[in-house]
Length: 249
Image (cartoon, rainbow, N blue to C red):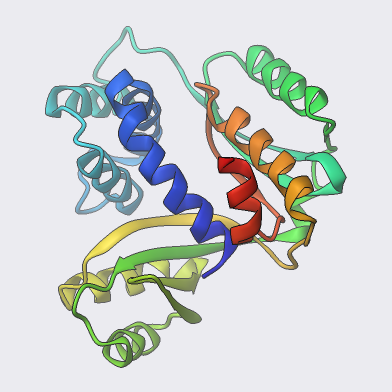
């Protein structure tokens, strides 16, 4: 399974602990608020439906969800205006990064991101200098359970998926951006259990590093994703099991 999927799995497990402190709820609430700008009905607003699925998976209280939808839909006049920004940068050893943020203070957010990058031996990058190394794809993670791999493979490919990878009881389905919703809905109609679903920036080519160097990059990813304003970080790093072992040690 891809490095992106490995890292997402780790973050999901860590998120179970973060949610107890409210950090995950705060980030999801911001994502709901942004998504709800395009409509408060998840049956029509696919992006909102994806975020609501994430909220349910994190056991986010219903009141928090409804409050965030009202803010995004403009029904809460005291709601803080949020801005959606993607920053580009480099981790140590020249590994390219795409950093997505939701913020009510652009200056604060960019200062925090720049500080984290510089402290770790990385740097901010000019707009467009990194983005060309990535492609925006739909990524759907499925809990296989007792499902047959061939059956899932056929459902996904017939719906328009580009690739399916299997590992440790999970499958990662990759789609073109424009086919993402169609594939997701085909899986739902087939009663496939979806663990996570998102539009993600995937690297066109991955960078391989020695485990200790890769662990440096992973520590930076953790630092960035711990920021209240950062929603997601994508890297061109090839995340190996050896690098994860060094990180955990």
